[in-house]
Amino acid sequence: MNSPAEYADRRWNPVTGCRADFGCWNRCWARARAMRHRENPTIAHRERYCGFRPAYWPERLREPCRWKARQKIATCFMGDLFAGGVLRHWQRLVFQMMIECDRHDYMVLTKRPGEMARFFSDESPVFCAAAASIEGGGTPFEAPVRQYWPPLNVWCGTSVSTQDDAIRRVPEVVGMGRYPWVSVEPILERVTLRPWIHGIRWVVVGGGNWKGAPMVKSWVEQLYHEAHDAGVAFWDKRNVLGADVKEWPTL
Ligand code: SF4
Image 1 (cartoon, rainbow, N blue to C red):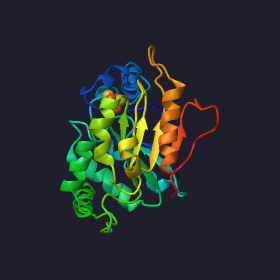
Image 2 (image 1 turned 180 degrees about the horizontal axis):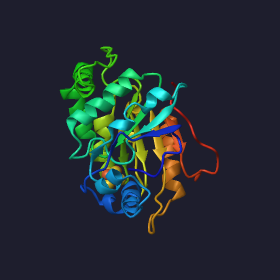
Image 3 (image 1 turned 90 degrees about the vertical axis):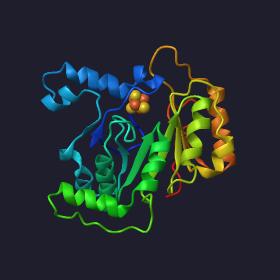
Image 4 (image 1 turned 60 degrees about the vertical axis):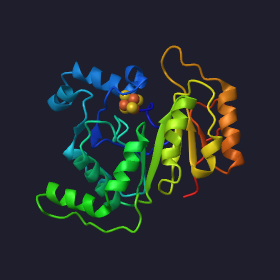
């Protein structure tokens, strides 16, 4: 996933890990961090053992309940919630928690938006509540059946680095939920979002931290103008535009 989300108030990682499906595997900061932890004896044994394999952390599931004020939460950024190896049951639990603790906004970002779309088409709030009930030993969570699916407080996003990524991934999130968004990070070439810009609410642009990842100002400017022409909020993570362009979609 992208580098740590400066735009989020909190990070929440009840599911971590990913699979080596894309070139990002070798430059993934989350994977690098997990690998470093494997060598660190102060880190809990299970975390060291799991490394970057998909894993569920039940002790983290209810963390959002403890945060009383409304928060913007980077959800499962230490991996990809829709990677192969992430069990459907885990995904249901995460979504149930987001439905239940709906005072927060949850940013979900995936490089597999087709899998996210499949999840929304196969599942429902009822299935998620049932999964949580089983997990809780038969004690149901407060399981409101929501009218909206995807939940309105879940920001469905995809991450792209190239135009080819954009062509394959962005159409999958257009119109998905209330706040479909695109993170162009690390931006590796000139990318246009113009064909889909009216179907998304938020664009984030950032660069990479590793050698060989340039951050060209005109690439960012182009995306900024595309977003602004369409009334879409824009977040310039690296302050490439020279001004503090850090906008939220209207909540
Ligand atoms: S998809 Fe995201 S989490 Fe998975 S390896 Fe790539 S950058 Fe890392």
